[in-house]
Amino acid sequence: MLTRENISSGAVWEDLVGYSRAVKIGNVIEVSGTTAIVNGEIVGVNNFYEQTKCILQKISNTLEKAGATMNDVVRTRIYVTDISKWEDIGRAHAEFFNNVKPATSMVQVSALIDKLLLVEIEATAVLSK
Image (tube, rainbow, N blue to C red; front, side):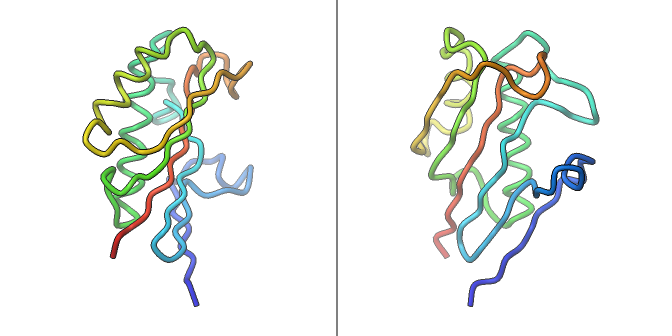
């Protein structure tokens, strides 16, 4: 039987909304939608590239807690408020994944939970062991 491990970031929203930063079941890790909020402050206001870098670093940190690395990522889903900024977002994504090349989607949405948030990313990782 596969065991479930909930990985928390300690964010207040996890209990308010009822979710985990990530969930690991067997060798699969699903990372929740992640934004560029650090210590309650939005990183990279008006900067798609900086927000994407911040988010991917947070995802990397979460995966580390789950016993994985960015090399284990097989899928990312990128939600953006302005698809015309795809090159800035893609450049940051490539800095983390150029050698991994996970499957990905980039979709424009009408809004995220705060108007200053420009990007939200989900990730799926699969451990080979």
